[in-house]
Structure formats: C-alpha cells, structure tokens
Image 1 (cartoon, rainbow, N blue to C red):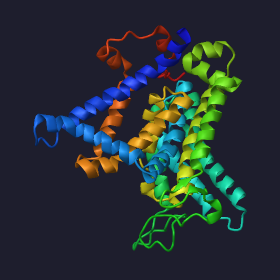
Image 2 (cartoon, rainbow, N blue to C red):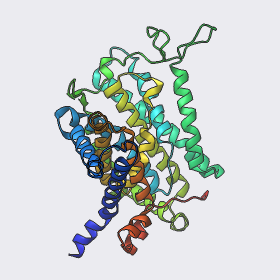
Image 3 (cartoon, rainbow, N blue to C red):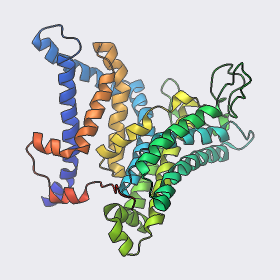
Image 4 (spheres, helix red, strand yellow):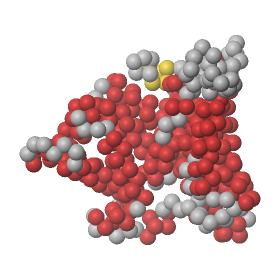
Length: 381
C-alpha cells in the first residue's frame, strides 16, 4: 500500500493542476466573450469545446498525427529545461537554442550533395545539437566564471539567436544590402533557406497528409537516454546533487563548475536537436517565423512532468494534443483557439505554485515532496 501511495502521490499535483486549469478555462468560456444564450447553454459551451478539442487531437488519423508532430519538439525542449532544472539552473533559452539548432542543421542539410543519406542526415542532426550546445554553453560559462545569472543571459541570447537567424536568411534589398549566407536565391524577397537535400531529410513513418516522421522515435529514445543518464550514472548523480545543494556537492568533491557547464551544454544540445528535427523532418527549410514559442512551452512541459524525463513524455503529449485540437475547437464553437494557451498558462501557474492546489483541495504537502521538488539556485554559485 505504501509503495502504491509513493507512486501515485507525485502524479497528484500535475493531475489536479490540469483539472483545475480545465475548470477555470471552462468558466472563462462560459462567462466571458459570447454572453448570449441561457445559463444552461453557456454552462454547456465548455463541454462542447472540450469535446471538439479532444476530437481535433484524437478523432481521426490526421488529428493524432498532428498531435505527434506537435509533441516532438515539445518533448525535446521540455527535456532541455528539465535537465537544467536538475542542476539547479533555469534555462529560459531553449527558444534561442532551438533556433540555433535549426540554423546549424539546415546549413549542413542544404550543402554536401552526394553524401549517403545516413551520413548526411546524421551530420545535419549533430550540427543542430552543436548549435544548441554552443548557445547553452555560453550562459553556463558566464555563470561559472563571472557570476552572471543564467536566466538573464538565456533570455538575452534568445533575441541574439533570433536576430542571427534572421541575418542568415536576409533577402537583401534595393539599397545594396548583402543577402544572408543561407538565403535562397530563388525566393525573391522572401527570407528563407533553400529546401534541404533529400539525403538530409528525416524519412516519413506516414507520409502526407499525415506527415509523421521518425523524429518522434528519436525524441522518445533521447528521453529514455536522459532518464538513464540522470538516474543510472555517476554524471547524473552529480547533476542532481549540484541541483539539490551546491555547497554540499562542492564539499563532497563534485566538480560543481564543470557540472554546471555540462548541464547547460546538454540542455542546449537537446533544444538544438529539437530545432534540427523540426527542420529536417517537417519544414525542410528554415525561415525566421519557424522559431515559434516551442522553447517557452518547454518550460511548462518540464514543470508539468515534474522535471522527470518520463513525466516530460506524457506532458509533451498532452500539450501536443491541446495544440492539435485548438483549430477544431475554434471552428466548431467559435471560441478563439487562444483559450488553449490560457489553459496551458493556468497549468503552468498551478504546477509552479502547488500551494494553490493544496489550498483549493485542502491537502497537506508531503514532506518527501517538498524535499524532492525542483529547485533552482538563484545565486551565482
């Protein structure tokens, strides 16, 4: 009985956070926006909305395939944030690392014709990881050697990455500006790269219109590897020890500086891999608008998954489903699909502040949960 309780208890806060967010989101749909109809009709509106959301995410082969496509980058960026959390770091830079991974992977993908597909694709994916890892190493090095806080540095690097990526595909203009080095010369005024070569594309599991590629299997394999690394190796033990108590880790002989830098390199590499997979498996090119907010969504995914790699898998699937079903929700109910982002933000708020959940449901926090909760060292270390 005690073992069952230990298994269920860590899942309770994420479950109640999702439930609470759905209830609050339903109240928003019922009493804000369109105020027409009787009270019962307005109370029934969120039920129909959630039914449409479910059908859009799972109701057909195309809906499920969209859920899987949305899940893939969320899984890897969620792992990126989770790994940093385990080391007591807050990686807000997954968005910029994602973009750099996209740029590096497409730079390899549009060049080197004639390479065998396995080699070309592998090099392109490794390049994406390298781009993200470089962008993750910068805040790690600055934190260790200058005391600069990783939150501030990673936020600023997001903007630098976006501007750098925009420059690489800049289309030039009539004033003699030079186009970017990756710009597609056949695209006219459009800022984008050429399509990556066929040898550098991730193959389809199910082709169009489903467009499910093998990137999802790569992401799941990476999640299992990160679980093994964090919980079955000495390196993972050192990362978690530094995250729990940096001073105690230093006293125990753990190389704290190296661990912080490694954790940020690994986190950046995971986000960069997400950008590479999205580029090589789905978009087949890079344009500035492809960056999106997937890196920031990874923060919510990591927290909802309790920063555990296996929990991140389920959290990314849930958020992928929400994103996939948002369009059908709006089409069927005329409720703006932005409500899905509101619900996701509420999930983040409830998970990040579990005291709210404890108060609403009149629960007492478990001392073991408090001790094992994700922690971040806000000082310079």
